[in-house]
Image (cartoon, rainbow, N blue to C red):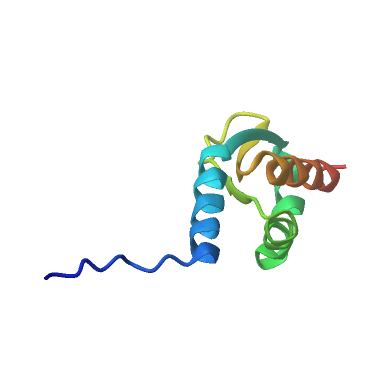
Length: 96
């Protein structure tokens, strides 16, 4: 007689995996134009401001490559919709 072993399921791990999948599916990217003159204020000394915005909002922020001509730089901000919205508000606040 052979016994079939079923893997034990950890409901906490299954729930966390489900949450991670849903978070990935909900991710979005917002392109936020930042006036060229304000990019330094958004990044901050040694990147401190942009790191703080990322940490507090939970979104990832990267500036696209600079073409050297346009009056604005584009900030690609990604994460869940609520995190992206918080980051966008914080970036806009830094531009004032």
